[in-house]
Length: 111
Image 1 (cartoon, one colour):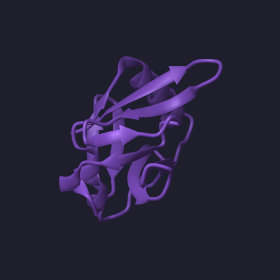
Image 2 (cartoon, helix red, strand yellow):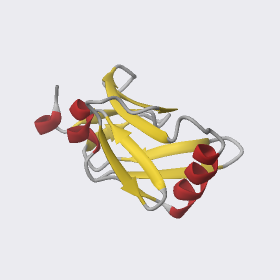
Image 3 (cartoon, helix red, strand yellow):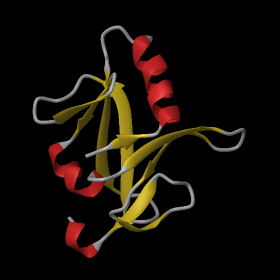
Image 4 (cartoon, helix red, strand yellow):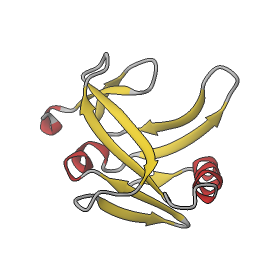
């Protein structure tokens, strides 16, 4: 479903280990951004309706409505001076914004 690069897995292991009560990276997609849809992520408790997956030692929860937009995506982490953070490489996007936080879904995934 979702893949993690080694750098994303290392970063998330450190991030989630420092947060004693909130051990899940929650992902969802919402309307907005300059390309039509925006990625959202937060370290929090999963919602009951979320799908929770385990990728090695990292737990990820995904909003049920967002799964179709994120299926097959890879989560990467970059620690560059100008552009650090978690980034989603999404095969379901026909185009992505330069900021990397918004995308246009393929026609069969439109809301």
